[in-house]
Length: 126
Image (cartoon, rainbow, N blue to C red):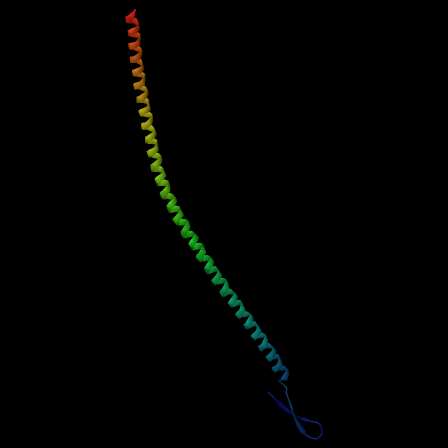
């Protein structure tokens, strides 16, 4: 808004910019808002980058979780197999001990018979 006023004795009209200070203040405020909007845009870009980075990290966590799940399932399978093998090994040990005891009993019986025969032969010669 401009106002006209009489200046001096010559009656000349001079245009006075009454709103010059207001316009300059509004211009300064507009530049300030523009700078703040630019800064806000940078913040949004940074946030978008952080969200993208976190998405990558979440994907890595998901992959590690899936790998851990596969490893746990494989471990459970190996434990089941080991349990079966351990049971089988115990039975093998049991049967080996039974066979060894039978062999010892047979050897003891054979030794007793041999001793009895030798003692009988020695007594028979007398």
